[in-house]
Image (cartoon, rainbow, N blue to C red; front, side):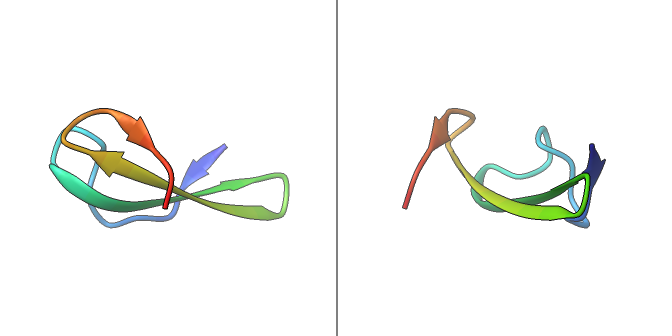
Length: 38
């Protein structure tokens, strides 16, 4: 797994977080330090 976002999870208070897992680009949403969906 590779982080594609410029910011780390700790730096990002709320917003989209991109990761690459074996060629799959996955976007997850950090909602005030909790995993969420949009």
